[in-house]
Structure formats: C-alpha cells, structure tokens
Length: 190
Length: 394
Image (cartoon, rainbow over all chains, first blue to last red):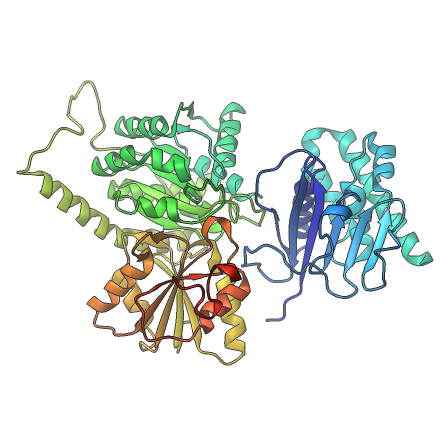
C-alpha cells in the first residue's frame, strides 16, 4: 500500500487558536480528497501558555492516534516560543519551519532547516483588525508545500467560520491569500 | 469533526428523551454539544444538568424505568461516583446507554486517558464496548441502543479520552430515516405507570437473590449473540462492520498475536503491517466487547486459521493493582478452559495518557518470551523506572 503521509505540528499560545488552525487545515485537506486528522496536545489549556496541535494528511486512511514526534513541518504562531519550546524537535533535514516573525532568526538558521518567516501578526491586523495569524500562516503552508490547495483552504474557511458572519469569512480569505502570495514572493527572492 | 461531536450527533440520531449529565474532562464536549442541540431546538429531549454524577445516573435510571430512552456520559472519578447507581441500573435490567470517555483514576489526579475507570466497573453488570475510532464510537452508540433495548441490559460505550474525544477525523453520520428504521421507538415492557402499579427494585431474600443474579449473568452472557447480530445488521444497513465482539487483524498464520482494546489498535495495525513486511508472522486482535467476555469468540478467532499462535501478548491500559493486568488474566483463563497451552504474556502500558508509541508497540512484539507468563510487566516506562530489557518488569 503506497501511502503519502504529511505530519504538521503547530506551536502557539493558549488563545491564539493553534487547535482551531489545526482543525481548519484538516477540514481543508479532507475537502481536497485526503484523509486527515487533527488533535491538540492533550492537556489543560490556559491563555498564554504554550500549546501544541497536530495534523496528519494522508492519501490512505489514518489509523494511528499517536502524537506526532517527527513532523514534516512546524508552524510557529509566536516567535517568543523559540526561547522556551523545542519547536524544531523531530524535524528531518530540510524540514519546514513557518514562523510568524518579521525576519528569520539568523542564529537558528544554520542551513539544516527550511525557514519561512513572515509577519503574520501585521498582515492579519491589516485584514482582520486583530493579530490573528492563523489563516496567514495556513496560506504560507499551502504556498510552501503542495500538500493542500488554496481553494480547499478558502472553502474550509467559508464552511468553518460561516457562523461568525460573512465579513469574518471574506477578511480571513484575504489574509490567507496574502500569506500565500507573500510566501511565493519570499521563496522566489531567496 | 471532533470525536465528541460525532458521538453527540449519533446520540441525537437515536432520539433520547432524557439526557442527564455532570461535566468532567474529557467527556464534557459530548454533553455540551447535546445541550447545544437541545437549546437550538434540533433535539427534542429533556436536558438535565445534574448536581453530581450520582444524580445524573439516578436520573437516567428513573427516566428509563418510566419508559424513556435516556443517555448520560462520564469518566474517571465521575464514573466511580456513579458506581452504586450503575450496579442498580444493571440489576434492574434497565436499558440505559452511556459513554465513558476513558480517563485515568486518581490519586495522583490525572485527566488523561487509560482504561482504569471502566475496568473498575467490569463487574457492574453492564455490557462494555470499546471503540477503536471515532467512526466506530458514533456507530456503536446506535448499535448500543438496539442491543440494550433488546436484551434489557445497560450498555457502556467506552472511547479513549483525548485520543478519540478531542481528535478531529472523518466521521460518516447516517441519515435520520435510516437510523429510525434501524432503531425503532423504545417501548419498555416493565415501564412504571401509575395506572398499572408495579414494584421495581423491591427487596430480595436469600431464597431468591441468587436466582436473580444467575438470570442476570445468563442475560449478559446471551447478549454476545445479540451484539454479533446487531453488528451484522448494522453492516448490512450502513455498510460499516466494526467486528461484533472482536476485531481481528491479519491473524492468518500469525505466530505472535497482540491482544488489546480501544484506539491504540490503529497504531497496532500499522506495526503489524510493518513487521509483516519484514517477514514476521504477527497479527492483532482487539476486544471490541469486554463484557460479556467473548471467551469462545476469542478461541475461535485465534484458531480460525489453525491455532498457529505460539505467543500471545496482551497490551492493556489498566491493571488490578497487586494482581496483574485484567484482560490478560481473563484471556489466560479462557484459553486454559479451551485446552490451549499457548504462552500469554501481559503488558500494562499507556497509563495516565502516556502515548503507546509505535516504538513501544514494536518492543512489546519483539520482547522475547521468557517462558514465565505470570508476571505483570509494564511497557513504556521511563528508563530510570525499570530495566528496559524486561520492559520494566516489577
């Protein structure tokens, strides 16, 4: 059975929506025709405390319910987590790190990993009026990998956030597209 | 969707007339979603926020005795607080369905998953079904009402806290019409009715108590057939077969068979595939039903392809402290009674939410038999806690 499996780990702080971002990504992957699974690092969640969430995207049914130990990509919603959390743990060489930051930390970028750093707080603030970096970072993931389509993420935002109103949906889609566009731009200039 | 929501949707499809519960992690999302559905008008049910788990269990006892279909859910200390009532529900032969979102029992207090809570209730007289995935958990709810109401026995659907309850994965929920056709409205023959007064739960004396208990035992044993039948009919109607009493995986020619319960089976199947790929004759078997204990189905399944198993390893998330693993003890007795002299080794692991990783499962498969199968061993202990060569034997 030839199976393609991608595992993604989210690092955020309680309240930033790491779990919601993971759920949104899994719903989009499912809409895209993949098998998908999302779950939080199990535990009590407190606002501001480090939080992890995981996503598996696969071409075959996902049977295991273990935590993710060797992710193919990590998404870091808050750059201050670099100081306290082992955010790159388990990544293979050239593993992908998507970081919400103005610039990549030189001291960490030793060439063994693939860093994509974008100011998702500012971008989301522009579109949403608040620093909610999730959809920007998901746009970056779609641009940096071919694991998920932009269209599926847009559809998942439409379905998942519909209860919060049309404006929330359309502004999040704009933020998603900006994350996607900027990542392509960064990748082409680097 | 999230496992808890899938289960709540499945409960709603069964049209319970009374839902009573008290919140406890990791069960709370199930009851919250049911409360939401009642408040939004999508579910016509009496939702009662109880003042304790003891009250919640008492409310569903009364509701079913009065002829209503009812639901509750709990876990861990909450389930244990229900204990007295759960024995009464079973003794009164009331078809209550509940979910146990499996969680460790304190002390030390721990909100994470293992099977100690429901295993502690194994002698309560409830049917216990353990789900391997969220799809199965949702489907098992629908089956549980059919089984409960046909057998007049309560059913506890056990699903691993967090590993299932908090995981988003695809779940195919059937349509209301199909569920209505599969699960007819509840008509309780012994319902309490003021126009036709009867006594329910009267006292019993030494001259008849034993016969009550013997009948109850017989009813639970006989329920195995109904569990199999309902699973078959469910598979025909909904196209999904979760295995009735047991879920056997690649037992053909298997010389080493792992026996386990719950959501860890997914990872065990992945390990079986990988070891088979390396030419090792391994297989796995999941007890979907723990009560009634499916002794004969286990023996049949292990011998379906010729009783090749030289070694059986049980990996379970609970133990009878001071004795041994629980499943391993019952499995040894069943195989002994069937005249099978296979080595059965017990491993206790995954307690208090510790992940049973692919590596731990592989090491349990690979740990050489020591010929002494009577010791309780722990799988996945931290290195400083014991000798890893014996998997932290103690």
